[in-house]
Image 1 (cartoon, rainbow, N blue to C red):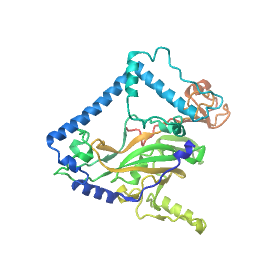
Image 2: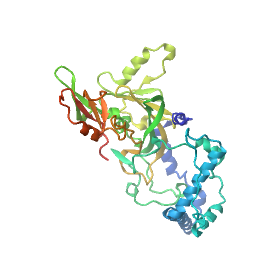
Image 3: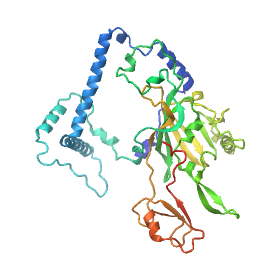
Image 4: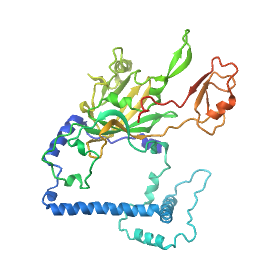
Amino acid sequence: MSRGFDSYFGPPSQPINVADFLQQANSALLSGYFTNTSWEQLTPEHRNAVEAEITESISDLKSSLEQVWDNPILSAHVLRQHESTVASVFGQADAPATKGRKRKRQIAPEGSESTPEVLQLQEKLDAINLRCWRLAVESALCMRAAKNSDYNALDAPKKTGSGVLHTPDHGDVGATLSSTPDSLRSPRPDAISYSNAVISLTVYSRISYLPSCLTRSSQHAVLSTQTLGDLLRVLPCASSNMPMEELDAEGDVSGYNFTDQTGDRSGCLFCIEDLIYGDGRETVDYADKLTAHIQKLPEDKRPQIKTASTSAYETTFNALTLRIQQPYWILHQGNCEHFFVIDQIRLAHASDPPLGYPLTLHLTPMVRDLCRACGKVPAVHSIVGDMRLGESPCLLCAPCWRSMGPPKNDDGVIVVPLVIPFVNHQNS
């Protein structure tokens, strides 16, 4: 069921022309459409008092949370309460436990609930009148264990490009942030229109052992002035970082060149709103190949798509009409497929990084195969043509390969490292 949820998108929004959105948002911003008339009627003293109250309220909430989590006794009590609530929800919903295992009841240590500070914290929690955040029995339908795609291999947004975010007040980006909500701020008399929109999108890939389902692989933020090719260059994909084969005089593979990887030289195409954006190569590009393939299908089964007038490396996001939560198709490196979904189209904010676009916001950790010999640690070598091993190629970890020792006759034995630094992503 969880795989099905990950592969379901939508419902999509109405078509949004990025250039029209930018123009209309700038017009509304300059005309003061987003301002609040009641806020305009307040005196400067009242505005300062409201801003101070907002800042103080947020600071109080943050400090109270930090006090609880920094105290091991209080944090343990909160965690136990949460686990007990979750177990109760599963018990009431009759959620089946894992086969062969029984769900353990969470039992608090003796005396842990009777300390004065724990009793005081519990009294504060019980005094909260807000009840909507409590877990109901129906919550069991939306509970699952964490998956690999839920984790983020990055601890901060990663700069993967050279795009520059131009803002009306570029010197204030990242400098000072006001706590006043945007809807309450007054229009600036010297306001200048934004030249860029920030587009957040999520990239999905097919699951190798379940190709009918998708899993999230990364999330990015691009500028509307950047091209589809800029997005493809920063897409983390093993197919774009495969080592080049070295051939001998007879045309057989004699080794691999790990310093020169395939990159984006094998072609690509984007299919967006029934338009195909090819790679623009002088030879037959991917758009022409796909069109020729579609023509071989029966007429009643041919998708109604056509080739765009510009290539992926010439088409900026400003020239596109997109829909939120609508999956779009990417094909590159032969038959490597990805799908990307637009999450958000917005104006720039003062907290946005000024440089390094496209940004990688989320990167799913890579799941590596285990060593065929020990079966305990991830493999780092692929051994090809070694008669001592039971299969070729054979995946081995470094200690197991060292224990094997060099082959007596190393003719035809190729050691391919599985951990290859991605040339396109090594600068962060």
